[in-house]
Image (cartoon, rainbow, N blue to C red; front, top):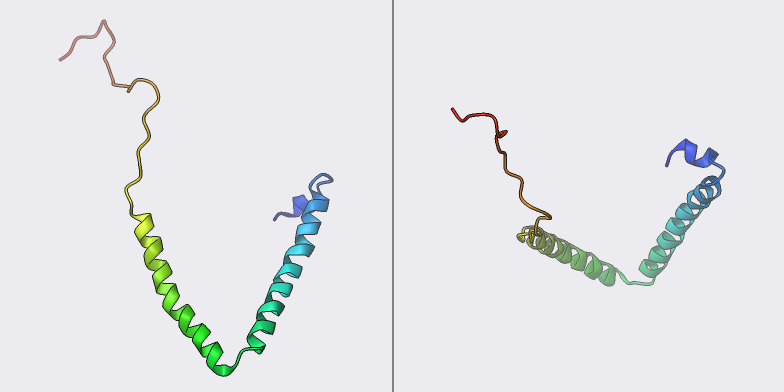
Length: 92
């Protein structure tokens, strides 16, 4: 976000709303997570952490497996361009 976005009469109000809304959403989301974690017992918290520790490498492996697939090459549009000499030049 640039300072010019705040000073622009067309984009300024939308930028101010974003500037106020995103931290509010972050605080509310953190509060919900804290509330949910406070209701869990110690063993439940450990199970959640263990689940996250197990799922993180699995998500990484899935991401890497999807990233190395050969991508389909789309057909080229138009004729393929090949270099050619001008008609009045001779080949050496």
